Image (cartoon, rainbow, N blue to C red; front, side, top):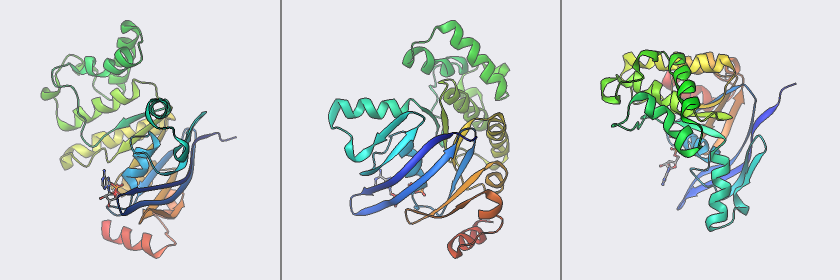
Length: 252
Ligand code: ADP
């Protein structure tokens, strides 16, 4: 039986006059990868940021396991922030640019969240961080500083840092778009490994070949709605909608 891990209903979000999300609904089962594709400005990042309440839609709900936020009913002030942060704690976010602390070592960067934000014992956090760094291929870089690493290595530290919080879900916002082309592959390989390992993830990317390999579910967005959805072999391999076809033709 597949267990629903993420459930999104009716997300609507405007920035001023600009209605960016016009009713987004989807579910992700536990252990699956969902990839959001679509033209620039279609709302992908706004969907992703709504999943951890970095954006607050006017309407709709997001549930990750047993933590649900109904955005229209979110109280103002402190109580609302408390609800948002409960949802945020369910996921780990990997941004376009890693934004590591420059004056801390790789290991210190990875343990910062668990020790400071989650109050976990330092020794245990260090052991976990070392295992995560090995997993992203950086066991020998624990004592290095960010400036001593390549962009791809820094982004892999960013991934280890997100995983260190033991989130239910990992969110990737165009994780390779700030990298030199020769560094993209090593980061995508790490993300593929995590998917194979059973992490539940949602990924915004323009890397179609990667999406094809990693996605259990592809959501194609255009103009703030999901125009087409399904397994990658269908949406990327044999799209039904004209808008999806046009997009893929342009990008491939
Ligand atoms: P995508 O990720 O598909 O490129 P986004 O979700 O980033 O799309 O953006 C969708 C639309 O929302 C765009 O028109 C963008 O300009 C607008 N937008 C996103 N964030 C903001 C913001 N903080 N303030 C105003 N407009 C925004």
